[in-house]
Length: 440
Ligand code: SF4
Image 1: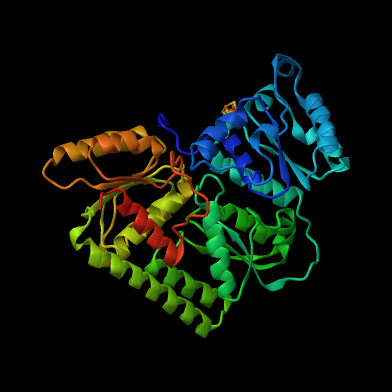
Image 2: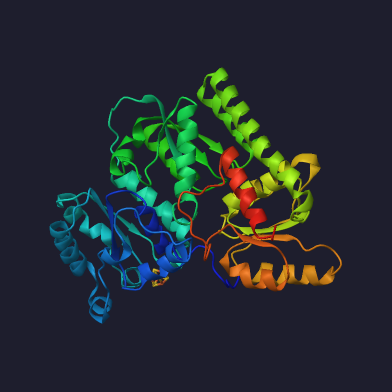
């Protein structure tokens, strides 16, 4: 049965436009009504850690601005006129046309503009992302598919044996994406690889063009970008390595590095040194904090997680395997496709010490609120669990007198610039955040 979704956590498919806004010098064009980008902004950008686009701010993103006339006669002529004007007034390396609900409903066929797109002054890719067809993760995947199919050439360029393309981190939807990619890039480079990342303060379209030259694709996620790397394998024959979650903390980061070493044939000594240094630094800082916390905050033993799949798995592994906490219940809210749900659920049955967690796949934000409130009310004498969620959960979590930290979209009134929970150092940042909700 289709569920009623209250307090949505990822926005409509049109939100895939934010992936384009994370690539330097890539100009998105909104073939939609004037409010669609604003809707996406509300959940993915403005109320999600006060982020902003890389090259083109939202108010200057060109738009077909659908009105009654386009609804009656179609919007393709207006799109052509808008793009022609865009060539004259914008400096950009690539334009990506995102087509929303109304053009889909009135039957605008972007394929019919193929020759216009091919002859255009600036390369153009186009993608249908009507909001009623999926969430912004679906929109993100649709955009990457369009980029690979319409823009990347199957050239005979030589493969760079050290280059690895990094996937599995969705810009904006993951409010920590920029800091995380910086940290991943640094770690991979120290391991002897040449990471190629298309988002953020990097080479933008240059990095996009280098995608086919990679020795392999690395996807750090339970399912995000898995279809993308499969498509790259199909088109360019590039193999891929999937690590099923963002490594947070010593257990997972060490495992991640060992997996990478084995897969990519990296130097054993180099990897051993990175692991030893990372684990030593983590234990040093955590040890100092533990000495202090004999008189400090009392972290609950149990936790509830309401997050997208990447963070739900990553943070749960760290909280259980490294910090010894017990999962109460995990709500995964990013619309995991059915074919991945069973594989993902299995990941929650094999924590250290034989611990497993009850997992609920639901995009409905009202359900965890109702169920966790009831759970807390049923056990008034037991210490309340720590609640990890999003801005939507703040009020009811605080009313329940539970410690609360937003970790998933929309993050609300936290500002995130270069912060990450990835790796050894990222876990210390997470530990600081967890404990910062208490008065020391
Ligand atoms: S659901 Fe449709 S009309 Fe609404 S914001 Fe998304 S694309 Fe635009």
